[in-house]
Length: 516
Image 1 (cartoon, helix red, strand yellow):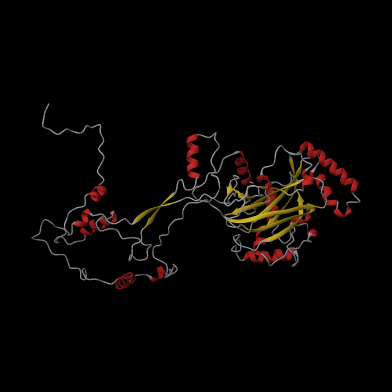
Image 2 (image 1 turned 180 degrees about the horizontal axis):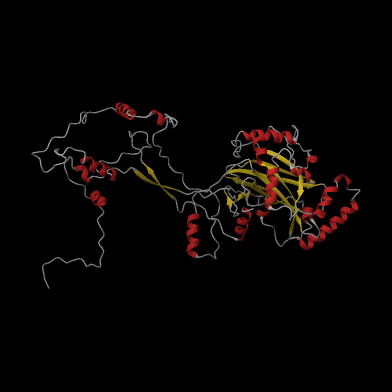
């Protein structure tokens, strides 16, 4: 064995490389000022790292149940909790005096890019054969390169910009550049905008409040649903919102479930999100009743022929109908059947806010009508003016801001299950926009559904997400809530996923509903 030799490092051990920057920071170079000092000094950082806390808009994070895989549940929980996993933002430090290209600093001359190296290597081929650049080792026979006038002279930035502008105008073809519009003088040549912090996507949001629902006769519970439909895309663009406006006396016909109902089932207002506003969006209202024997026409007939003013005349018939309804409610109170439907053209509400008042007495046309107060022309005249405004473009289709409106829908159509398919519904919705609608052939059911439609506030109180999470602020959990309705966009929305949405059996129903 040889002695006196330094011990060698075993091959099995991994040697960590030295952090050059850290070493130089701990051992500053002791060199005098000179041209080579910059080689051992690092330039100042032009990027800073900022940690932005994530915003959690709900009081509780949406995490899976305890039955999930522990690791997956922990990952989702940490992702969902605001502030636990903040967003890391890389911000470019602006450099004063570097043009108007978003504060971008020029590349350091000590760290040339690949393109610069290519340009330098290509420039050597352009030099004379006898120059010093082409024959570095033949100094005696080399020819001096031509001098660059003004290389070391200080030139003002304004003068340099003017000179560059004149050079750009040389050999320019004006006919070619005339094909493009002139750029804005105030706009920079290169605009580097900071990307927004990822957050949950919301479209233009409207708030719909269901106030009351009444018919000429009251014999049984009637339940309603609201949803948005796009007649042009032939798609349902929101999930259903279920509301119950029955009186306590009518609710008594149903078997009372054990315990108190969930507060989320008592919601009577909903917030709908619209990512792609268009004049083809309708708010479709469907009504249901307790399942009973017989055809839907037989079930709707009493609502069409009987009036509240004739209650004394039809007292025996009404008592018989209430007795039959009570029997079906006791036996089949948990099951529903289609009853009636109607639709509201949202563009009528947005573009006529405060200017056109709808006519409540338009039952002879067989079309859905609603009341806003004072009469302003016939239904066909208002729709004709609406079509003229829509022909100018779709810039009126903005649901972000309009004057709130209170509507009273007075006409409904009986919903026959075998005659109101998704395709038929889209045909009816498209037909409602025409001055001579085919819906007048249908016999309406007279009723009164009163709703409020307004732009949704930025931070509504007592609001629930589609997963029934409490949105801030929510001061009192006992107050009747407002539900956010999940949107099914007509086209794809490319946004990062920042929240967790529970996958349940209801999602299969949502996917089927989105397809119509």
